[in-house]
Length: 199
Length: 235
Image (cartoon, rainbow over all chains, first blue to last red; front, side, top):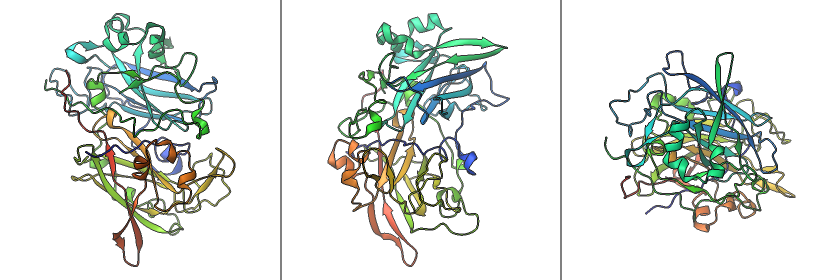
């Protein structure tokens, strides 16, 4: 059996290839805008900051998100469910760098429900991957939605997380001028440390 | 619905820990708490799918894709290899992204202030799709070593950053390729973050006389192994 290739840090200098290539005269294959005009579903923004163990913003992190469409379907051959239609205007993958204040945001839609282990439904969620200088391996977490209380209460994974830490996975809904945003801060270490999973 | 694929876990004998004291930036960025266990669901065994239309042939030639008024400076090289999984299966039709410093050891990134020249004809960003046998190939220039502030007189060995997806977010990998014989390798806390000497050695490309093009460019071979499928089907 072949052995896995070891992970190495993304380093501080990825932007001109991965997140902001246009700014350097190139192009990226992903951005923080996942929606087009034709995308189905309710528009939301996911926004937050990344903090280190001293509570300081992390200005050189990269956040990737992967999510189902509004009908709960992943745009991937492994998802073969006929009753949850694909949305050809939604791929479900986004990528953002953090700014000097550690901020990131995504323009996306709220995902539908997807099946979990044993066929039980999972609460709507977004898969989140964190990369940064100083992280030799990326970290996986998940974003759940604060206005999905009953679905969250029944979610197997969320229930496997110690109750005192569950709130680190739940993004708080904010609405102003008709714009809906979910706040999802990521704390890499220490007080309020975000739950990361061994995916 | 058919039973979805499941992927083998990350091999923590091979994968670096979050906290690695010699690499100073890990001190405040390594999670303290152990990772929580997660049973893979459809959410983890799916991931972004890119087609061959996501790239152009130019994207894979870093000596051409950013030209403004001439050829980039430095030693032209070919970097090629295969992307495989732990069972030796080819990871086909999968996106590979690379980025690197120029021949003088300078990144075009705006925050890189190393006192070395930028090259107007080189950004150091490239991408390609693996073919039906998992093969990829880039043409670029050999990146320079550069100083960083991890410790006194710290220099990064020459390296090329690689980003790979494979079939799912579970197989996602960001790594770095190094060059054989680099005297900085034993001194580099990032390279040495990989705990196992064999795993470190696999991050070092092999010089390939077979693929070296006469009168044109040396070649380096770098194979990458992503997580394999688990034999146990998902519940």
